[in-house]
Amino acid sequence: MNEGQGDVSKFEKYVASDAILHNAYPAAGSDINAWKDRVRMFAAAFSKIHVTIEDQIAEGDKVVTRTIFGGTHTGSFRGIPATGRRIAVDEIQITRMKDGKVAERWSLLDVPNLLKQIGVDRIPS
Image (cartoon, rainbow, N blue to C red; front, side, top):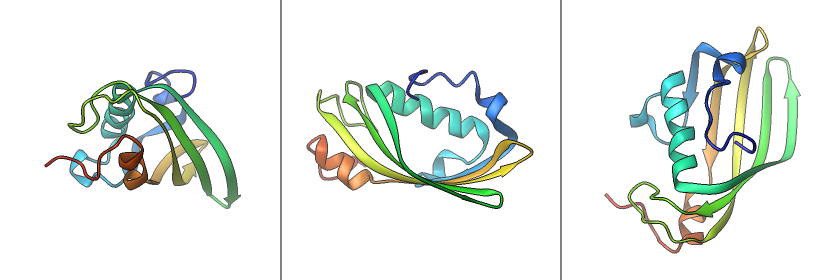
């Protein structure tokens, strides 16, 4: 995200073709294409994205990472028009590796805090 700002062209290098993404948007799907769509969605909604790794712990085939996801809200995010506000929110990821690639990932982004920072209290229905 830091260098590509939504470029998903390197996914095949780092993510298994049958990888599964578990996230807070189950209706969005869980395969590699849904994961790419999620990256593109955030890149379209936020510019100057920067993800900072705060903590990372690995054991066996799993890696737990706590990051700060930052950016500027310059595009529509889940129906919320751009506000121009800067955000910095926590995200926790648990990644299962297999044969040197991401095989599975659980992700939890602090969406309530993100919404608060862009000045809304909920995602429009």
